[in-house]
Length: 228
Image (cartoon, rainbow, N blue to C red; front, side, top):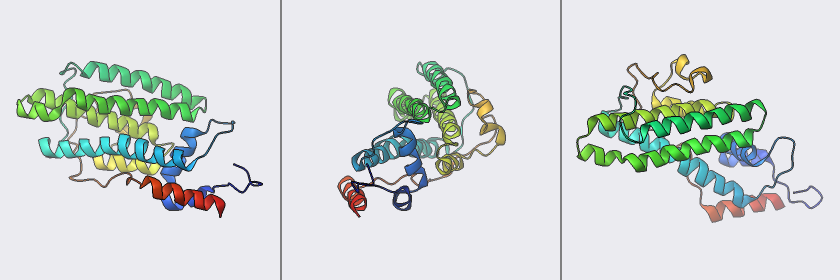
């Protein structure tokens, strides 16, 4: 990308069309501090659709939907390790969180985001492993409660870690989860798994964090702006 060649994309155009958080996420995920990086319309749209829409947005939507369907939005109490997947999820999440802290302290924001998305990935996988819809049919209430609790907890942790990077998205996640206690949105308590002991309740239906983009249309739009 260079001004002499005329293939420049301005951040304000991206912010206006796709939002501040999506633009910040892409730039901070793709660009290493103090180094050159490559911008492409294809890469931007892919990050938006897959990372923000599919991975993060769908995780929140699925969790909110199941919480309301199975528990009328009321977040269950923490019961420790109930399913065979609970301990693994907690240990891996804490390990990735340690790496996030290390990278953030050294301004390696792109690497920190990579670790955060690993947490999102294992949390999505946790849903497939525990299959809450099967637990409901088998009337395994204790296991189901543990799964839903862990989903909310991991989303709480992700929201806290995303706060310095995409603040609006972080705030919206916490609102939809019904978590507003200062102690629960503090980085100091990010590794704890037994803090949601109050009467917390998710909203009934949340708005999608990000709306999926039409790949072909948006790629052509960005390319046109780069030539303008």
